Image (cartoon, rainbow, N blue to C red; front, side, top):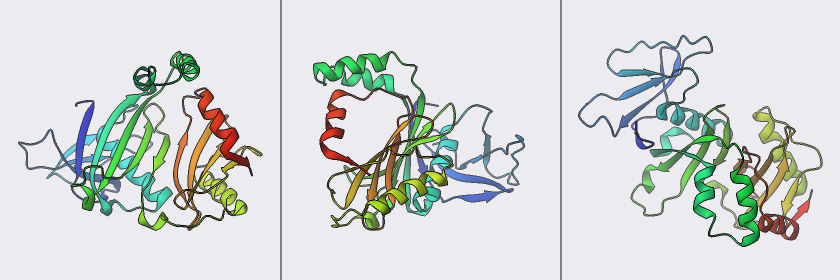
Length: 261
């Protein structure tokens, strides 16, 4: 399978033989009228299916296929953001590593930032799978907004998620610190992650009805989040999964534009 692949979501999640599954029309199956069904094996490795009309692809231990990545991303959007798969028109899958970003951006940063970027490039960085969902009604848009999920390929952890919903848009500018803190803690409780005490910072002002929040998890990794002021729900989060050093320009932004909660 190509490193970059486009999978068209032909139907929402379905249940096949008790295992969660999703049906896709794959771009590498042009000559076939069959859909590809991916079943997630149980913890005991005994995933089963009761259908004989579709090709069944089982996920090998330690491997995450494009199809399984789409299933994981779909579940994350539903569990963490309340978005249903029926709103997705297309799923685009890409595999990457931060080393690619280091090479691309090295000459675009200031001398100070580039020096830190070089230090980060020496780190052992993770391979990740990026799944982007585009809504059916936006497929013909040149710059369509997409729901973006990043999965650590080695651990299966959802390390980044960005969701675009009309419900989160607001002109609200007043920041309720208590609600922001509660939203962050509740969100990571859902993922069975703990936020380290006294690490929460919030942007001094709102933008388009949202605020940015910075915090550290108890495992030492830092997180950058966006929270809607309309309903105090998380719109996006990104865990520093490679434990990269912050760039000087980022540290300046944090000092000038954020305050402690």
